[in-house]
Amino acid sequence: MQMAFYRCEARIIGREKRGRSVVAAAAYRAGTKLRDELRDKVYDYARRLKGVIDSTILSPADAPEWTHDPEQLWNSVERQEKRKDAQLAREFILAVPPELSADAQFQTAVDWARQELVAKGMIAEVSLHHSKTGNNPHVHILCTMRKLDGEKFSPKKATEWNDVALLVQQRESWANAVNAALEKAGRPERVDHRSLKERGIDREPEPKIGVAATAMKRRGVLLDPERFKLVRHVRLMNEVMPLLKSIRTTGQLPMWKIQPTWWTKPTTFLSQFCMRAAERLKGSWRKLVTAQKSKQPDEPDRER
Image 1 (cartoon, rainbow, N blue to C red):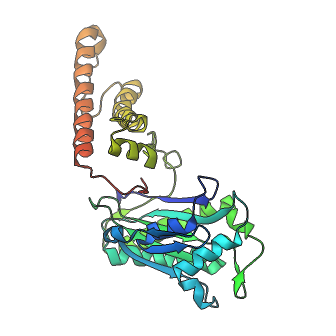
Image 2: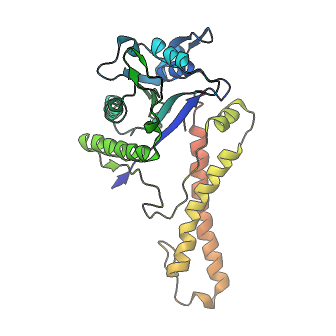
Image 3: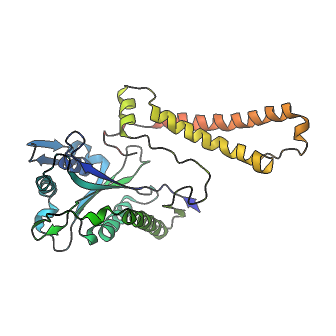
């Protein structure tokens, strides 16, 4: 079975970070122009519409018409929340397989959002993004944190949506949705929502580079930010560790049988081992350098 990249991450968008606006977040993710009534400011991201493949708002069946208008919807959220550190929206970031067509990617996310989010009372704006390189198709889903109470939002937030067990179930259901879409498309790839440890894979997970480090590198603030160094270190260690583990457990290297009397010539053995390890490391390093050179700059809020 071929494994595809999996991601289902949930996070909160709130005002505590530089007075962040959910109207601005919605405008960026949908690639549109929205006016923030609270701040009397227009956020215009229509210029990046090329990277936004599709976007739609999903509401419960009995929701009022204004919930389908992004400007009215997110300004209503801003008005509802009074605290300066208020939590404004929950965002899901989903990786979608590049092996699927754009229509299949978007429909898979829309169907999942209807089943897992809207059915529970959330209003969700689903936006499919394609990077310039085409290597990182992903979906942003902005969700309200209050249920509707008639024509308005409820005075109380739906705290049951914060349950960790719910997120665990959502992560598994997204993996099932992606695998069903891949199977329907006749593709052999599959995803797995479980951690490397849960799958019995002896490998360190790669850390995310993150928006801040990417922006610093793009603007030339730092030529090689620490997050980039950390990712390279983890990748190189994951290449070398199987060699060391194989020696400890079997006395031989993968694809290289060691003579039973290797200890009679330890210097020769160590020299050969170092050569093999160096070959693996050089190969990994070349791949990393090539990948870095081929990367294109991305938008400021690009998720990695």
